[in-house]
Image (cartoon, rainbow, N blue to C red):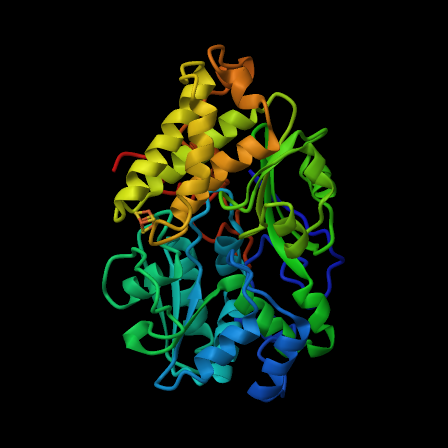
Length: 438
Ligand code: SF4
């Protein structure tokens, strides 16, 4: 079960509203100020730039720069709302599309007005989110033709070049860069691929420009732990990781897995860090999509690293040979550590892979696997050695599952009649885990 609780006082201009378990209708969205705002596209772009809004999909790229690049790229631009959430520990994007589809569609239309895009796409694998967005489009037709494009869920399907490739009629697999979508994307035209939370924040800035810094200064997070429930929350940047662990319910955390699987592991000394991109980067980690998994006493970082690497190994799109062999080597070695069967040179091999593999795949998946190994060595020096030949009791009690236990369920969302919006189990649809049979 995933609980929803905002750390911010509710007010218009936040993403998690007063009724986060309810589907927001078009009427309710408009009544709350949605679709309003007389700002010109140029003025809205200035506000987005002034607020310092950064993308919420993982890379935290400055949004205004991306908008300007697509606008100035010539041709007939397109805009894509990317709701394909590949990280197993993140639910915010699917929740947002299920519960507040009008907010995302409003943001998509605002981004289109800034870039001059004439077509919009909502890209997602979650069938319930897709249905909710289609319903919202029918209820309140967007200003530009907007299509929902569904894809099969995989770890890499949400990568921006994979999204473009799928919308263009191909498989949802990453392509080599350049060109990047802002140069040549959907229909070979400049394309803005933007995370759905990012678009939602553009819409909020449009309707509440006076609060633009506050809107750009908070983020939606999915917090979880191996032994506790998960929490979907919204928090201001500057909040410490330790405070988030407390809110999530992990007492005396010994570390965390950051950014979904892209921020690696951090040790207990790093829990004083705050939600600040520069601060986290200086410490060698990242917030990514805002998914943080806290490890409490009894949760071994080696088992968590093995789970993460196992998930990445299974999620490899198997296009790049180095990714197939590299993720398998890292995952197998970390698994061996958990049961005490790893060879004596394990530490040296993990160190070599963590420095030699990043940047060698077409997408970032291989980097994430290498980063997992490197961060384990950095954050928990000595832990690999203590696992050699002996394994560990915590790992034996909770052996790696290939990443299955990293999956966080989407919180339930109800329609205005108080019925579940979809005939799905309470936790939302089971996701097709890339760790399953292929
Ligand atoms: S790095 Fe891995 S996941 Fe990414 S495109 Fe290559 S094979 Fe696929």
